Amino acid sequence: MLCSKTELEIEVAKKRLIRQFKHKITEKQLLEANQKIYYDFRVNQAMEIIKMANKIFQGNLAVAFSGGKDSLVALHITLNVNPETPVIFNNTTVNFPETIKYVKDLQKEWGFNLYVTRHKTSFLKEVKTKGWATHENRWCCKPFKDQPAFNFLEENAIDAEITGTTRTESIYRRSLTPFRLPKKGLKIIRINPIYDWNYWEVWKYIKENKLPYNPLYDKGYRRIGCWCCPLNGPSHYRRLRKTHPKLYQFLQKFEPKHPYMMKLKNLSK
Image 1: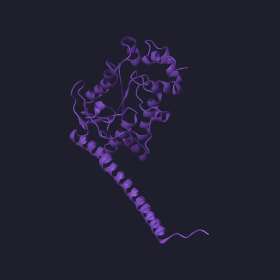
Image 2: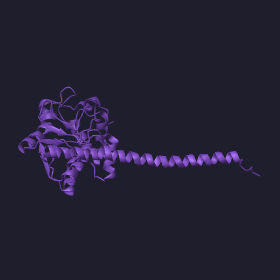
Image 3: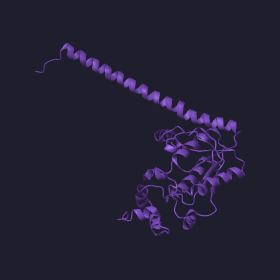
Image 4: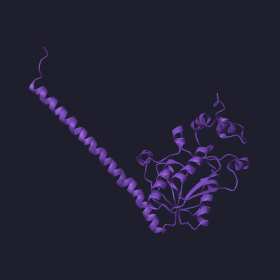
């Protein structure tokens, strides 16, 4: 026969059960605390930044929407504060086709005031004469990203632009603030409501609010800007070969040769 437990063993087992029970209660309380802190110090803070911006600029703002996850969150929060805020989507002429469709579909679903800006010529036509951009010479950013949006703001006398920029994106943005005055280049005042959010907090907001997001993320892309950006790493082009074979084949034949088409000659093997 099995020996019955001693009084000491029973007491130890009881204490263990009590500790486990307390641990479950503590775990629940900590999860609730994290949730409250997230909404108090991230979501509500972002809404307050937008409310302050509307007060400072008397609602004379526009929100920049790239079709990416960060600008989606900034857009959603902005429209919750002021649904009449104009939305700028800048077509670089080398956006992924999914992004173009996604932006159009979202505009139909949410009904915001969408304005599409773009450079007067195509990006690939400029590459024919200037060559591909490099880390040292990012000649394409200003004319194809910044200038069209700036022109729209100027022509419509809009005082500032709301972005989805975060300071966790790169080491160069660590000093990002909610309100950013231009130090050089184009004189665009930028408002960054989610400046202090991280990658996981952005996705938490998207999932909890059931926001429709760009389908490119489900295909494994972490950045959904220009599909042929020469500053993207080799993994981007391995993925492009699988998800968009026609774009990849086009890039293989394009002149001047794309940097990664030259470096990774065996990529298609």
